[in-house]
Structures are given as structure tokens and as C-alpha cells.
Length: 408
Image (cartoon, rainbow, N blue to C red; front, side):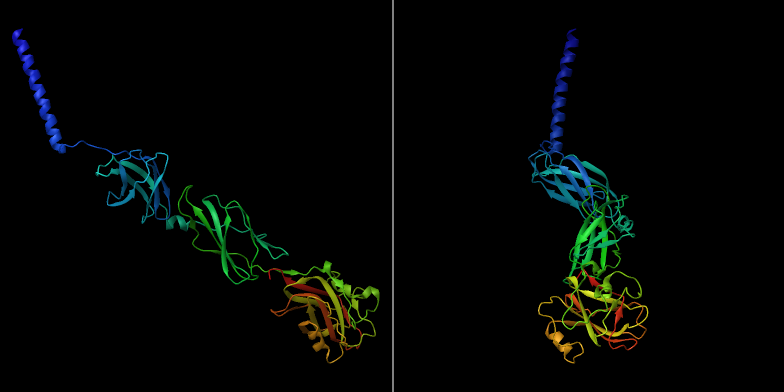
């Protein structure tokens, strides 16, 4: 028994000194320093972009952390993010640029001021998008059955179909030229099918590109490579005949009877009409003679006029169309047959909009464009100088139609 106790005592002493020796060797291996691991980041995730990505995490509450280092491509590439936050409810974002369209893995380390490094944190399956994704995108489709609506106040509304849901549409960039001649761009939101333009220059081009993101939270918007051209838009509309009124001035021609008044020129008839559904001047009118009427409002930009003759005779083949915005003190004293009549008209503020000469029998509709620089006009005065059959008093017409550009 005494020998057994002696042996146990010797073993305990030997074990004690053995442990002390191992502890000393471990400290010698670490250079008499303790191993310190700074806190690791929390909730890491990614937000994809165009040939780049954003890595996002909540910072560690460890106040000793001074920076984070992100590695990828087997640690051949890295980026350093300075630590300025230690509240775990905050977010830190590291933008990783210059990537390829690929799926990446990233490793994030926390560092303190002494260079101690945390255990690694992996962020895997980070997808980066680029030209391949972009090449599959298409622009939103406009409503081919009703691509646009033009309003009398000069506004236009572009009509689109519902956005494609195969990718996440965020907006559509619409480019056009405004009335000052400047190219402007506005965005149509993804949830809207209509876009109204209030300053469009008539006849100019409209193009658009739709923008998409690959997933919710992406940091970049991808726009379709090629723009789509919208159907050409002009604001040319028929002037409202419902507003037209007779406005006889001194020396204007009388009518053959009340049923053949000047108002027959805007009654909406189609094609050459017969008596009495026509304007018919009186037998004492002489030639040339004039008629005057009010279109009911000022039109900033008259674009054209169409005249339709009677279905038989007395159709004008040489006539002038004059216009003015305000008829106050615009009446002339001279007869239309007087050689000084045109000069007096100009002196009174009238503008010669167009001289029209026909070489046919004057029956069919003839549409003529006004010059581009015509002034605003409300009142029209027609000077009939000659009719096809050479009559010296009578002139007949079935209809007159005017167009204006509401976008100017």
C-alpha cells in the first residue's frame, strides 16, 4: 500500500510539471500574446448591379473594429471599408466594382487597430448582371390602336400598354422636343399607361427607352439598348365649325336669298352640293367681291383650308383668303374691286393667308396649305376674283373647312 501511494504521488507531480511545460510552449508559439478575434458582421446580403454589386451588412457592436476587408477571386481582389458605425441596427455598404456577369463568393473580415482579424464570413451566390441581361430587355409597347390623344389646349397624351412583367420595369425615359426647340426627357412610371406632354413641338420626334431591374433592391437600372420611335404626332385638327358665325363687313357681297347665306359654308355637307344647299352671292355683287365670317376663337396656327364648289356652276377658280385676330377697326372702306383694296386691308391689319387658283371646273374639294409663318387668326375674309364660267356677279360654294395645329 505504501508503495502504491508513493507511485501515485510521483505521477501527479510529473503531470503537473508536464502541463506547465505545454502551457509555456503554447505561449512561446504565440509570442506570449493572447488570440483576439474582433466581432463578426451580421445579416450579410447583396444587392446586384450592372457589372458591380453592393454587399450590405449590419456592423458588429465591437467598438475596437476599425475596418472591414472584403476578398473575392480567391483573395486576389479586395476592397477596404472603414468602420464608422458600431450599432448593430445600422447598415454598412461596400460597392464592389469592375465585376463580370457571373456568380461570385465574397469573404468579409473585421479588423481592429492592432491588426487582429475576425473569423471569416462568407457571402455566397452573389449574382452580377450585365450585357447579357440587358440584351434580353424590350421597350414597353404603345397602344397601337390609340397611340396618342391630342387635346385642344395643346396637350398630348401618349398611351401605352401595361408594362411587361417578365422583368421588373421601373420607368420609361421619354425624349421629345419642346416648343422652344430643346430636347427634354421625362420618366413614365411603371404603374402608369399614360403620359401627358404639355409643351410638345408639333411634328417633332418622340423616342423612348424602358428601364428594368433584375431583382428588387438592385442598385442599377438597365435600359433597353435601342430606343423605340413613337408614331409621329401632329396636332392638326379641324377648326370647330360649331363656333363659326357670319360677320358681314361693309362692301361684302349680299346673298341670293336667306337660305343661301354664308353659313352654308360650314353646315357640314360633304361633296359638291346643289341649290339651295350652297352659298350663293346676290346678282348685284360684282366681281371681285368679298364675304367675311368669324371662326369663334383665335387659332394660333392655321395650317390649311379646303374649299368645295357647287355641283354645277359659278365656282371660284381665283380667290384669296385673308385673316385677322381682332376685327376691331378692321373694316375697309374700299370696294373689293378697287385697285387699292389690298393695301387698305394690310393697313387695317389683315394678312393675305393664301391665293388659290384652280384649273378644273371648281367642283371637287381642293385642300391648300398655308405658309408656315401665318399669324394668329380668328376672322376670315374671302375675296372671290373670278369664277369658272366668267359670271360677273354670282359665286357659289358648298363648303369651306379650316385646319389648325393645336400644338403650336
